Image (cartoon, rainbow, N blue to C red; front, side):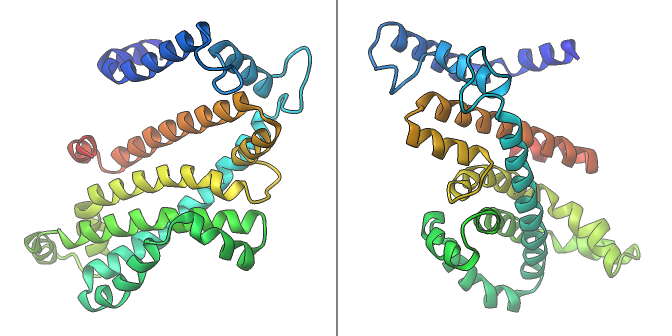
Length: 269
């Protein structure tokens, strides 16, 4: 395991330049007091805030040991919204990509809805679903749906006709045509949509959770803002960023396990 981590760092060292530079810059800014600590906490302050949030300190605060219940709540919402958006996005993307009439019928409406920003949906979502869990799930699913739908549709439309005809000549028809021919051919584009959707779902997690849920990383950030705990806001942001990166890595590995010959397409995306 240690050797694998070391090899990964060695192969991708250039990607660590910017994060390390940001840490060094923030340390220098804090050390020379260019920016007050209440606006940009020092690395040491962030470390102690994270330690208290995760395992607690000698002098407990209201955030002590609250990371895990909030994190579990947020991850549960992420996966529920992502799975729902994936089912809807891939299904409708395949249907509209394969059928020109349906595409012309639903595309104008969906593109009009897509142009409305997430914050614009927040007031009506509260009216429809109330404050809490259902409202959060709606906002996250809606935002995650569109990149999955559009990339699936694009991938299906770009499948060469000769691939479909070759599959039919080999006896593929009905469900087997989709499962064995069309889905593998469109999967690189679908994966791009899934990766974009997964990232957006993390972004909209905060928007949904500030509307009144009891637990979640967004709820902690909202509470920390009202209490002036900038360190807790940044800690939550860093945790969300890290989990977003980890979830993207696992999604790509899962996709490559399904279609091992898709490695080149995954790297290009």
